[in-house]
Length: 122
Image 1 (cartoon, one colour):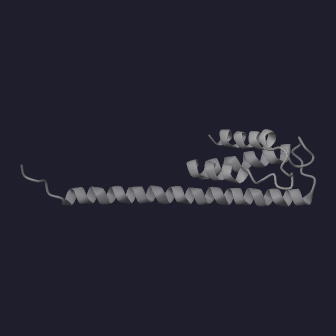
Image 2: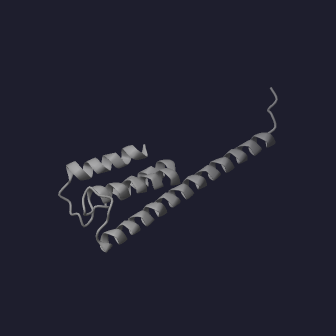
Image 3: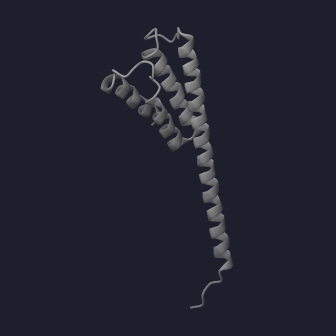
């Protein structure tokens, strides 16, 4: 799922709106990282971040079609992008864990309530 999300964003960025400034190539990838993290937590969010970063370096940062980053500005922008991607992934994982704990607590309360309630005579 994560790979498909990033592939869709790469396709949109490359073919649908290729005229967007190279000064802001990261913008479309943030929602993709959010979605991957929302659906899967930390692991898929980090995978989306790494795939997005590789796509950005190869396809949109000079020199194009290379894993090298020439300019310090691009390298610092990439570091910030990756840090934000990891933070988004961490926050989504925390949300998923909180939802799991809340669901487990609800189940425990439900079980306790069922044990307390005496059976009705027929």
